[in-house]
Amino acid sequence: MPHISDGEIRSALRRVERTRKQETLVDGEGHGTGRLILAVRPMPTRVTADWMAQQWRDKKRLKRKIGSYPAVSLASAREIFGRDFAGAIQKGRSIKIATDIRSGTVADLFEGYIASLKAAGKPSWREAEKGLNKIANTLGRNRPAREIDPEEIVEVIRPIYERGARAMADHVRSYIRSAFSWGMKSEHDYRATSPRRFHIPFNPASGIPTEPKVRGTRWLDEDEFRRLYWWLDCPDVPVHPSYPRAVQLIMLTGQRVEEIARFHVDQWDGVEKIIDWSKTKNNQPHAVPVPSLAVELIESITPNEHGWYFPSAKDPSRPVAHGSLYSFVWRQRERGVIPYATNRDLRRTFKTLAGKAGLSKEIRDRLQNHALQDVSSKSYDRWNYMREKRAGMAKWDEFVRGVLFNSPPGQFTPPAPPNCQAAVATGSADRLRSVAVAPFPDVVRSG
Image (cartoon, rainbow, N blue to C red; front, side, top):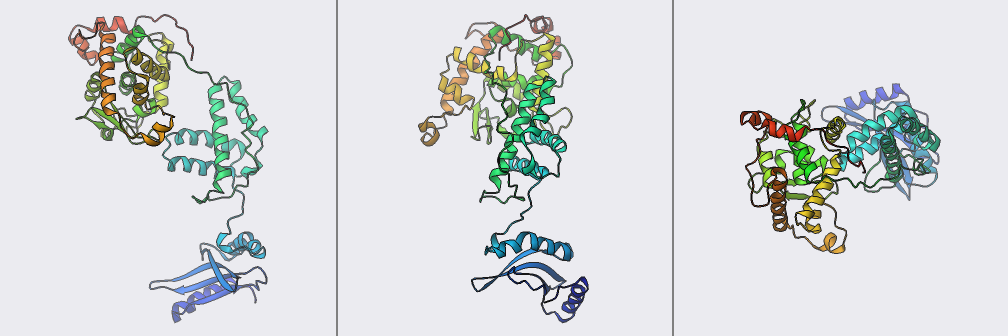
């Protein structure tokens, strides 16, 4: 049977439009390899033309759509049929399970990995996308991912490491390793359809060593905690209001930086005084009652029109990035006006000082949503521990008020003014400023 031509296709479209009867055009003989056909069908308002791969198997005729004409041209349809279906038919495989056999490119790999992070609701996808876009340009976006070797990845990472950005170098290695790991699994994952087959023989980043992990040990004692909190309450330099308030809330609740940064009105129950996250870092829903000082702080903040308590300084439609909070604390501690601490040190501080306040480790773990690994907690215990968490937060509230106002438990002074303007109005600005901005002595910078 001869090959069809574009002229024959146009003639068939006109005939079907006139006669309203379906026609099938067959391209080539198809001995042993099935056939490429064009099914031309009349529809109520138009005529459609669909390219199909056709196969006879077990005395049955199977069809699989390739695309529609003219979006898929005659030449393209022939190329796709020969590439993805002819070989499968010759091997006796069903065209129902035939796939695009082209090896996915570096761009395909990274884009697919980022899409998987988005679909899983991972907040890290933005940073991963930014990093992988730069890496793709260096490696070659249109190169098959399976051709990338470890030496190339080492040469991408080495300049980052040599300029002193060791943590960033480790992040880049992690992004690449995770993307290739996803690519190796995705084409065999029956639960999802991968847009490309990557045919990656091994993960080129898996053998690259990582930076030694340094376990943090730094935490703030009561005096350091007080100095930092009051500096945040009344900074000595202009700062975006979201930054110090967010860090204060981290100090008062011990929650993760990412979760406080994305604090939204939908997560605040003003009646029960609870912050409720449906999705967290460990993929477990988390609700935490907050101490009265944190309630006062939250209720003093007016969320913006998008519902964010801590909006981004550049784009109010988005929350402040947790990286911005890290940078904010880093800049101030380098000035020497606050204790040397990272945002994670503040979470460690809550864990430590709350223990001093009398909270059991189990309740502290539950308040901070640390994963409990015992079988009972993971598989059986479904009690929400809200009553116990409330009691724990009440103890912590009493303790932290004593720390901040230099008074014994049960003998509290009135809360400090909520902002610098109020402090000036009440004549207490000098007291707060003397606590806040006095040069802070050097501390052991471990962790």
